[in-house]
Image 1 (cartoon, rainbow, N blue to C red):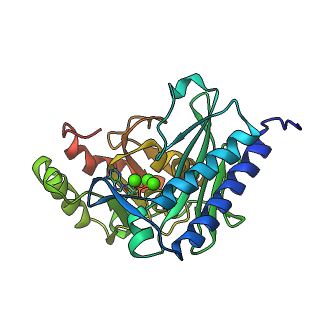
Image 2 (cartoon, helix red, strand yellow; image 1 turned 60 degrees about the vertical axis):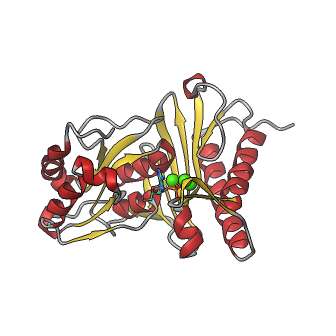
Length: 274
Ligand code: 2AM
Ligand code: CA
Ligand code: CA
Ligand code: CA
């Protein structure tokens, strides 16, 4: 067999190819009957499509690079992600609830990490045919157009996005209060339901900032690199660096009001969220 070296160029091409293939498959399956299951509750869904798409993407990756590791939301990961020099982190459908209900506003998220460093991030929205991608040190793109966050946005002029679980727990620990307070400071608040898309929209300037108290690694692995390469800042909500392989809180925004936003979020420090 012909073995391709895992150059950044080759990895980028494969990541984009996987994302497009996954998106196409999601759209096709969406138009046919499929099963929907509860994972932990009625608000935590997984469909047969999530599983099929993830399986397909993993096959495509391992067919080319059998020595790479793949961390995906729907597969039980074998072993320690640190053992792989190159680790793919994938979410086959980010926004499964939207996939089921809206048939729009979901995405495929595919990232490549080498020794813990993000090198490639791809987020594909198949229903709008929008491909966001970034290569470490080479910038971020939307359908081939370079993204640059250079607008001087003030917090009071910002369109902010937060994904909060509006449940009892959020109420108990006071997250709803902080978000409500923040909502009073900004121009508007949005909640789209796909973290990978929300991060990509920050990179594209469609949203000025994104905050979540808790995301999984596959939700932000690609999107965080896209924001960073567009010139935005991404950290935990306390300003600490974001991990790459575990759950974390996240704030991603235009540099212009990063410090100010962090200041408001500081009120949530000590709350029991990672
Ligand atoms: P998913 O659709 O891949 O599960 C929605 O605001 C964001 O949170 C999406 O990125 C969604 O990813 C994720 N999400 C939805 N339900 C969740 C749950 N119960 N636990 C953790 N993440 C969830
Ligand atoms: Ca899920
Ligand atoms: Ca997800
Ligand atoms: Ca998912």
